[in-house]
Amino acid sequence: MRTDVVVLGAGIIGVSIAVHLQKRGRSVILVDKRKPGEETSYGNAGLIQREGVYPYGFPHDFGALLRYALNNTVDAHYHLSALPKLAPFLFQYWMHSRPEKHKAIARLYAPLIEHSVTEHNALAEEAGATGLIRPTGWVKVFRTQAAMDEQVRDAEKVRRDFGVHFDAIDRAGVAEREPSIKADLVGGLHWTDPSSVSDPHHLTMAYVGLFERLGGRLAAGDAKTLEQTAEGWMIQTELGPVQAKSVVVALGAWADVVTKKLGYNLPLAVKRGYHMHYKPQGNAVLNRPTLDFERGYFLAPMSRGIRLTTGAEFALRDDAPTPVQLGRAEPIAREFFPLGERVDPHPWMGSRPCTPDMMPIIGPASKHKDLWFSFGHAHHGLTLGPITGRLLAEMMTGEPTVIDPTPYRADRF
Image (cartoon, rainbow, N blue to C red):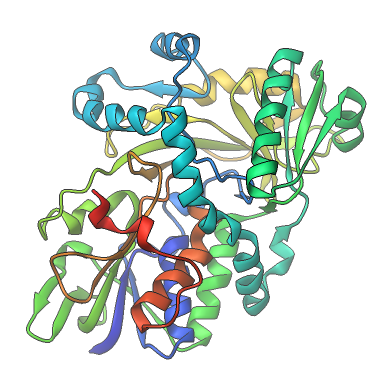
């Protein structure tokens, strides 16, 4: 079987790329070992983070570093056994997170973020999935005035530099927006430009449906079987061998399955995360995603219930799940909001693919013709799926690109 492009990886990034290529007249086969959207794209806070121009950095505050070193927090956890392998990545991550460097990275990262909501809305309209996207923003709430004052100052800089909007709200403003919250809060910060998604997996599947209606095909296959041929690329799938002129690696945390085999030593690590759904008690309602800032966990209203998500776990990708952060967060969250019984039979775990400079790798491979990379989106995979898909499809088809792709090329490493 022949096709123009094989896209490896059927998460939100790969699906979005496949849709945009198919829209531009390329025949595409989307290949994954699992069904679409069942890995990292399945579990997240459901945010399309228009405000997220500063990617999540490594803390430089000594107090925060000491707190994380004790390894007993909700927002961060690490496997001691993994640190020797992770140390080179963590050092580079720390270096790139220095304030001036982080600010420079934000300038390069912002063009992607600026198109996040508009590109999602465009794809959702075509896919008949606009009902899954809520333009309600999200709220960061505070227990102390000092924390709120610092975060509002940072938000003011983001508004000034990048044109993102927010409302600083007092205790009454939080109660008005989220009357079911029980915690004693001093106020909050309501980012009004972002959107949220009531079911990220269903949104991914809606985009898959659009891809198939445009003539694209899905196939189960193992990326490890990819090989270069005289005419391009070939991979073994359930449909038999598939030959393609071009291949896109959009495998997220598993990108190294292909890249290392082909001779690319890219600095990719993972931050693992967990979630659990709960029924709300009685008539309790959470109107928009909410971060309990000083405790370090996130609650998001989903179609399945209230989703509690944890921060980052630094571990090797294939280590056994250790949902200790979820165990630490749940009792705090129950005091914060009237959570009822658990809905899921066990905690979900996903692996966020991260680069040390906090920006994704998008663009052509340097050593192989017609090999393209698109991974490393860290916490912003859902946010950046459609804009990444559009950008890479424009690059592959020779169209003028919506933004300058140069900062995201693999050869920056």
